[in-house]
Length: 149
Image (cartoon, rainbow, N blue to C red; front, top):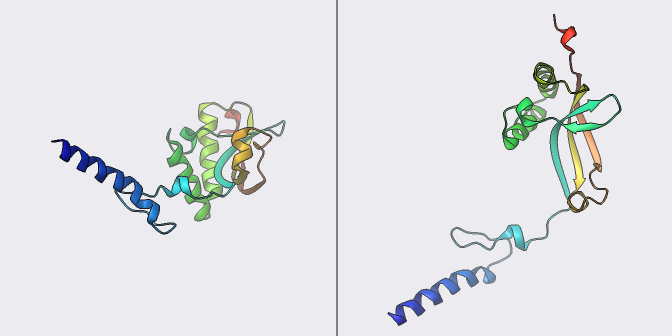
């Protein structure tokens, strides 16, 4: 019984240490070299979003339920697909209609954009919340309730 326990322990230890001998970048299931933790990552991250633009010039991301549904990843995929297919203007107008029906919240315009951030500065909150670069794909007004026909 004790010999079996040592055998299991050695097998598990070998499975954990095996990836140390693999070439850089190799990953396998169920034994992993954990590349998400062992490789240097780029500091630059891009995100696609629909931004609510207020009269004072401030911009806030629109909640995912106005874009697709309550799921953040589905909203991001919807925005990314619209940009890739050249349908950013149509998406912008649809989100503007959704927003005007629910809660306008002082929003005058929407912008479908791709923003680039320094990820380390962003998460340290050391002035990194402003994008390094923003590419606007579409802009549209949010209709007022009185604008509706």
